[in-house]
Length: 207
Image (cartoon, rainbow, N blue to C red; front, side):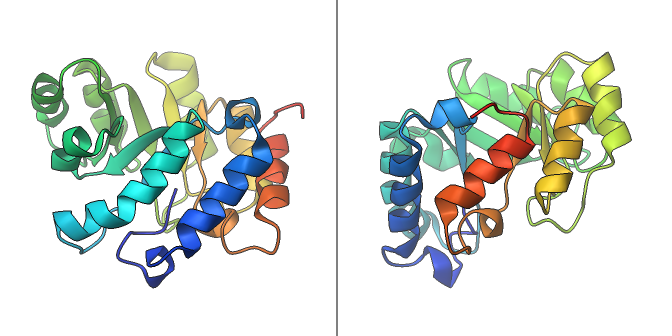
């Protein structure tokens, strides 16, 4: 994940440069489990948001990494982005309506907090994945919830809120399909490449 795109850390070239360095260092990001970049939302208007998003989107897609917008449904098509991560909550019908609007070729993820009901509903309505936890790390996910979903449900599960390698390992062992890494875990460190590869190893990738 990026920081929210209205964050000072997302201004200028620093974030794009850091992302470029990480992707270049990895060579093939998919070998390390890096398959998606989530562009966090913020208070910018759509034009300003898209201006900050575009350099990140271009770099990620060039490396074979899909790019999702958090909630900015209207920016997916004009940007050439791959999909949207929808902060769902308890909104019956939201995923179904959005799937109809976007079509089948767009990735549609549903962030469901800790709600089993919202997650099951999102899966039934056509979400490509459901997500538990909070993107800002304020709400960690119960590993038992991850285990329940992995054993009982079909749509892929993304877990948010992992704050360190031990948490990443715990969620991976519980059955999470993907783990959303807060920007602090790879961006604000002395060696982003080493930090990311350490997290990938914690998630079970044999590097």
